[in-house]
Image (cartoon, rainbow, N blue to C red; front, top):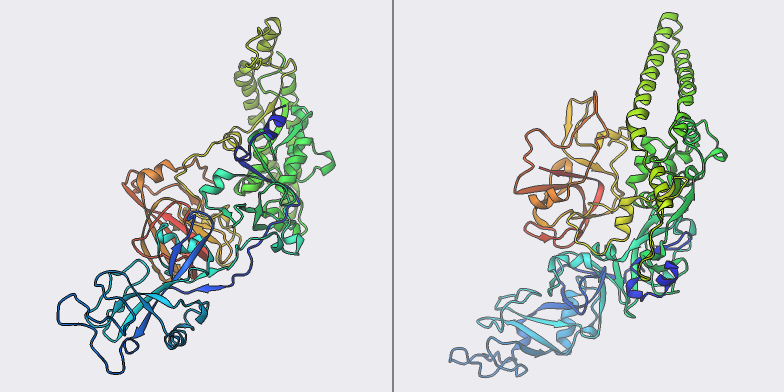
Length: 640
């Protein structure tokens, strides 16, 4: 019923984009060329979308000899601020105001000869006959400097400027973020397109590397906040998608969200519940515990998985670790802490886990004898024997045959399991049993049914008599139905993942963590290393100001962002330390770190020298989510 009503909503109320399995992502067309630093930018419309439309503005210096007759007559009379003749009879004489100048054919040819190598996109036909005179030789500044350029202020040259009124370019917003929506100049080169860069004709032919492996749901509000929306000349909206391809590798691309424009792309509302999967799990507590235990030691066949285990298995196979293992012929992922954490680090895997709706018997429902929980008791002995078999195989491999050593190890196993059993008994008596309330409430509801209410008010449902209910991930649901909110923090990378290998290609997952995690705990690492391919876009985490932008030896190109202390403290997430013990002592902050400081500094290292966004300089103000730079080979971040 709710889905039927949702179908009738206006398009503007359908704020969820469903990218179904088998959807194909569109790539931007090859740029037509590249605009050089110094080209003026005049914004023609929206300055917030991923691709924006601009008119280029060119400022050139023309030798003064073009402005005088062969008799070299003076252009100025003796009276101050009064022009008696103008320049070559072609411009009006008016001081301190915008003045026009009419170019001759020979002057256009000169400009092309001098400037074509710098501005190859410009043709002689593009240059208009009438241009603006910015400054004019000795003692003649016709107007103040503008946002587009500085005048030559040289008596041997006159500065002219013109805008291409009939030649529009599309460029990426990242190239002009430093202008903050105001007309100005490019600080670095920018690719351009004559037509809107996205088209359904630009779907790559290599389907395996471009087809979505599993469905994704994306919030239009979140996409707009992150600057991942583009609108073409027909006012059609495109959104940028990050997903997995059929090889379980991350891909980026665009989809057209116009109704029926692209296969497997749908616009929905939260009430359509797109991307959610319902599972009725019928295995008992004992059966689940037994099968999960066997799964952890790779002793359970896929056909023996329960429905919930099957669903989770399908999600885990899309993680980075598994896609790497599969190539090596290693066994599939297990429901261990390592594999589950790896899944939660990838947004598409975490999204799918959060969208699992599982019907199962509540932990608050059981009989007085705790029969379902007692099933677990029988598993302890089996698990103890499995542990002993694993240890015995290890001892044999190491060649340890002395009876006293083997008996000692087995004795430790017995003592550990005895301790576990004792704690489990206490857990049942002191926590589980006192928290059983479901059956009592369900019986009371059955004896006292809810009275009929207003027709517009839905009747409350009673608790089920068998203790079964649908379990929903609360955080995923809040995020899913969330109306647009203001977020302070933006991740430095899309789907950030801490490095798994060190710079010598050795497997040291803790090497990129923060703390005394290097050289067996004798060397600290004052940062966080994130894995990224060369050329990966990097973002400002918070609103702030760039206070450093230069090379720092082995750290490569470095940017330091100054942010407000209140913003960083408000953005702090709950975090569980992964590495502790000898040789890998990870911690959240140093003992002398002042968490109450007014300002903090976020440091980005190992940034690309050539691929960078214009406006990267000391003093530039940035917003959270601004695309500021690109990765050279890895990225470090440090707050201090």
